Amino acid sequence: MTDYGEEQRNELEALESIYPDSFTVLSENPPSFTITVTSEAGENDETVQTTLKFTYSEKYPDEAPLYEIFSQENLEDNDVSDILKLLALQAEENLGMVMIFTLVTAVQEKLNEIVDQIKTRREEEKKQKEKEAEEAEKVYCKAGISFIIFYICFVSHLSNHMSFLFSKQLFHGTPVTIENFLSWKAKFDAELLEIKKKRMKEEEQAGKNKLSGKQLFETDHNLDTSDIQFLEDAGNNVEVDESLFQEMDDLDLEDDGDGPDYTPADPESDLTD
Image 1 (cartoon, rainbow, N blue to C red):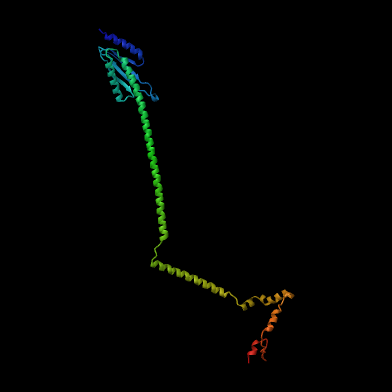
Image 2: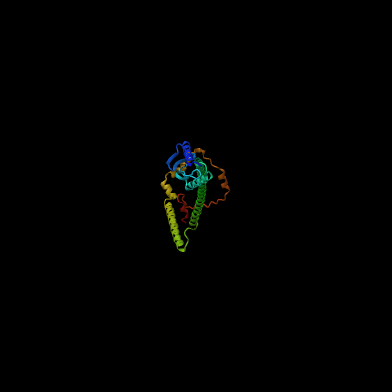
């Protein structure tokens, strides 16, 4: 006959020595206690943790102990559910034997798996964020390129449009009508007439200021002695070409003679008859 009380006391002593810092007795009748299980440190020293509460049934270990999640840290609801399923499975497989150490060890391994899953999930999230950032950057670059192309096309179109308007204004100008042509013609004729009047006035003024030969001799007395002065300056160096006078002998000159009343000082005296 199995002494359930003895087996339970022996297991409690063993558990207290195995988990000295995490084993806590809650009651002795029925025997109830907690064991805190912590995963190995993950990335950035993060851990997950749970505190398991066990209560011996009267016929434990032939019957499964009562168990529950007393508390937990950093566990999702689905993680808690998975741990409870694991405890039920392990308890079923180990009936007839003391099993608390086996159950705690299974939960410990499960917590380590959860830490690895958290690490993997975070790496995937990081990669996903990087991928989204790259895609966003590509979209931004495409949008930037599209904007630049649009801006260039817009500026080019605007430049062409302005050139068209300028050329249209330059070459077409103001349309010619009968009214504005007659107005321009009258203005042009008036300007031309003014130019002619100004020119005639200048010519008339120039004519008044021009001196006759007599006026030149009267105003410039140097002309009276200019030829004499020239001969005096030349002196005996004046050369006369005698051949010019020899040729005069060949001319048929008639000596009509002067009239009896001819006076050299008065050339018209010979015409009185």
